[in-house]
Image (tube, rainbow, N blue to C red):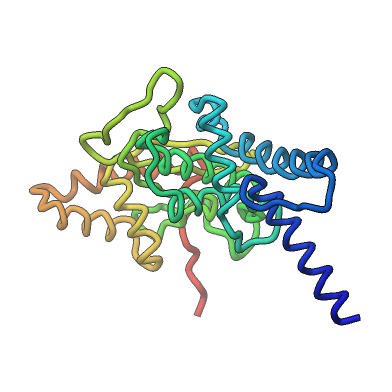
Amino acid sequence: MPEAGIDFRARQQAFAAHLRDPSRCEVADIEDRRLKIYRELFYNNVENCLAAAFPVLRKLSDDAVWHARVRDFYARHRSIAPQFHRVPEEFLRFLEDERGEHADDPPFLRELAHYEWVELELSVSPLEIAPARRPDAPDPNGDPLAAPPVLSPLAWTLGYTFPVHRIGPDFQPQVPGDAPTWLIVNRDRADNVRFMEINAVTARLTALIEAQPQASGRELLLQIAGELAHPQPEVVVTEGARIFEQLRTRDILLGTRRSVAG
């Protein structure tokens, strides 16, 4: 029995290796017509999943390039997560860590893939924006200058060297932009995933909100004014108030941290 078990596992491993890379791993004792059914079934499931998760990247890639890229992932990558819905994340990890440089890959490949993955990740995230009536929820009417501002857990601030949100069939930059592209991608209360292009100051503000959760918005803006050596710190505070209002209307800023009664 143990020998039979070992033989079965060996056959399973050989079969799986063939499905991953049939050109290198042959299975001699199974009719190829039968194997082809499984090869196409398994590969098509993965390819369809990736095409749906990365629609812009798929649209920009001709068929031969796209399938070569997916087959490279399919043959070489060893996934950490066993769940099928995590395949896009594994593909992104493969592009970032294992794919290497290929002449057919555009220079923005990894950044565009990351941006598209973020949109997918936010759309399926189990996190929710807490109803304002809950006592542990931020105060939606609080003044973010006077109290600590609270960002949505479904809002991600992202920085890229390429303007990934503009890339498409008619715009495919070959060199990074002169300055970083800063974006906030978020899922709002209506479960719509949206992006907002921001500047470096707003990106710094969101980073400080996360890093200093007890600081008021005014304190954070004055800190930024100091970092910029701005001659009129109150101008930064005034502009910051306008930014807070923009973030609030898009469900990026949920309100302010409620004070805890002593």
